[in-house]
Amino acid sequence: MLLPKCSVCSEEYHHDAVNNKQPPVLRCGHSFCAGCVRGLLDNSRHHTIECPACRRATVEADVQINYGLSDVVQQMREALAANGDTTTTANNNTTHPASGQPAPLTDRQRQEEADYLMAVRLSQEINGEVHANALSTGQGDTVAVRYLVSGGCSAAAPSECRTGTTPSVRSHEVVSEGTGRLPTVGQQVLYDITVWNDGFDTTNKAYDIPGLIHRVSPRERDGWWYEALLSMKEGEVRRIIVHTDASDQQYVQLRLICIIPECWPENEDEETQQTSVDGDDEAESDADDGDDLLEISIEYDDNNGGHDTHQTSAGTAASPQATNSSSPAIGAHRPQQTSDGFSVSPMGVRYRITREGTGRVPTLDQRVKYDFAIVEDESAQFDGGDEADELNGAVIRLSAVRDWFDEALLSMRDGEVRHIIDPHGGYVQLRLIGILDG
Image (cartoon, rainbow, N blue to C red; front, side):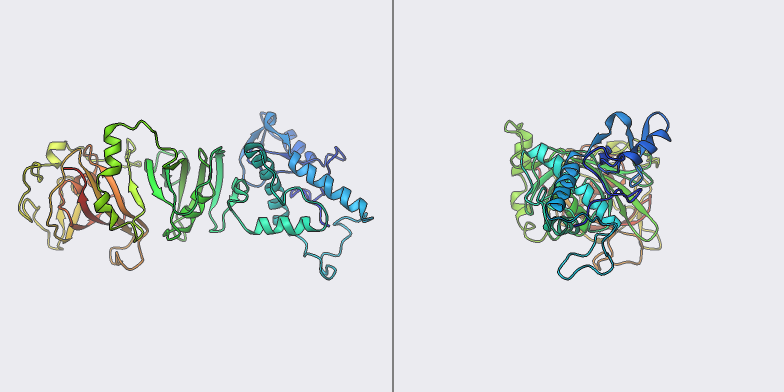
């Protein structure tokens, strides 16, 4: 039977304070032997450890014994003694294991095993329950733990995803543990998302969307999104590093607020109740084709992700719009096109209408439903699977004119499709599906 080892010194853990081999756990969730932790503390400044695995800092006062792992080590040692087996992994033939015996764990698997056992203890404390495989003894221990480790993030053991790499190969860290329920496929969740371009908490913020409502669907375009939401508990805050291509990456923070409808306030105001009713008929046709995003309330960063934004008054940007009582003729008030077929908006943004709309033009304070897609290359096809980002069936209230996105929606008709050159990079396709108010 293989005993867990410290990934720094490769020595086996011990449940007693023998040779400083008890397994303390750092704030990030990684465990190392007491001797190595003490060495890290002795060589640190201000009594702070930098985790050798994830580089997250832990102050000395937060270092605690990993009792979950310690208990398992004790039971495994007692099982070895009861079976008359006094050998350890140092004396085992790991190259040619006995027939029918499990293959030895790699160093990485041993670390994941230790992390998982720590997660089991956390899960027990939160849920008051014991995982079926967590504290078993005997020959099945290694097999059980290996199975759970290889399975990645799952509802059976969600806290094993506290830090590390997910099956879709995205590095992540749980910065605040959740204490609520786990969502399941098909449920709607309410969450916040913040994205930075060059590091967490920097000034170069790509976007910040609070209060996003989303249905967790197995048809999600990007696996990491689906993967993260299904492994988070209500209240959890998680940070994920997402690689956008071979050289670039984005830094994403997700906060799972709650699962809908159970968490929805019982005493909603009239406007909120109307929001969930309005557009039901219009949204119903999209319900079966993956239009999972229902409503978004967007907060723009003050400096628009580090880029200056032209200031335009609501009246200036809304000038192409008519009042609620009437709409301009199709094609009216369109800026003159340039030689390449693009027009220039009052904010200086270049765009081209690829399909005229035939409905109304929205006004301020109305809610609109739209599709949004981005490609990195102007020659790429918007419907050819080259989209770098995509939102389907999103809903937003046009409460102010803050940038080219608001400006565009306030000058489009129902059904219009527009290609826009994003001043900050990328090529956007915007389709106004309909106006939900009025």
